Length: 142
Image 1 (cartoon, rainbow, N blue to C red):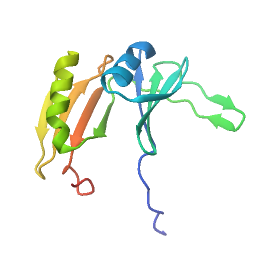
Image 2 (spheres, one colour):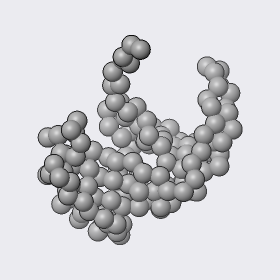
Image 3 (cartoon, one colour):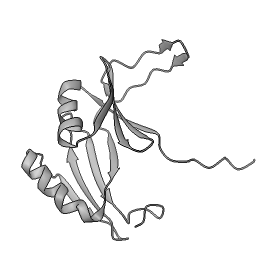
Image 4 (spheres, helix red, strand yellow):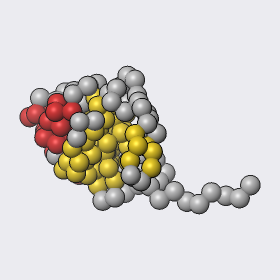
């Protein structure tokens, strides 16, 4: 078997929520992401250059969607999801203070064997949102 071409990163990651307005107050307001697309079934946020966070309304995406360009296969998620934002180690104290000021409790904080630190919070729907500073994985170093 021939080796696969190299993956160039993660373009999108997604979470499923019960209320898009409430999710926007968290992701757009507290986290500070710019909403690029807003609609009845999803919002798309600019997470970093070339990276997007898709916030889907739970139950609104289970069926296939026909577009002019083709069919988007249905998908859904049950229970809390998880994803991580990359943050600078030098910004961790600012994130801690920002969450405290916004009334968002820090659920957990982990110092990884390689020296990285992750701060975990929950969004309004219970999704686990990680703010991870390097070094965490062999491919995520300072």
